[in-house]
Length: 117
Image (cartoon, rainbow, N blue to C red; front, top):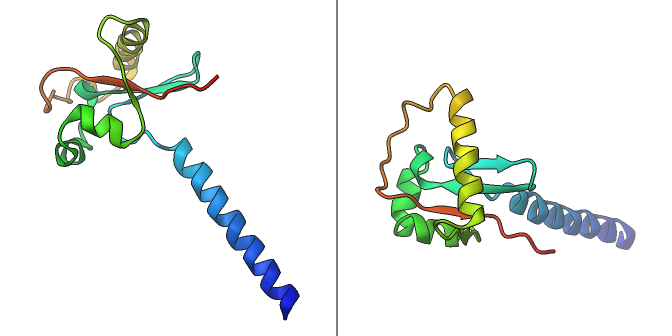
């Protein structure tokens, strides 16, 4: 009985660890996300947001939404901002819904996944 309990506890701990790792790897949700394969990070761009608009508004706007997801705000004009804008243009070329998304949040906010080297 004791061995069975230990085995169940080990499985439960592994499940918690796996869900924590899996959850953080899927932190960017919705239409606003753009994956940068070259830099291995994602960006969230408010002007692309469509399905997550209600959640963004509930959080208090794009900046608060980014921070609630653990993302870093991207400074306008920075190299990361320019990279996200470049990726946005590339994605829009191949996205069938690119013309249907309207900027429902006003302005443009970009945030990015911080990389810890």
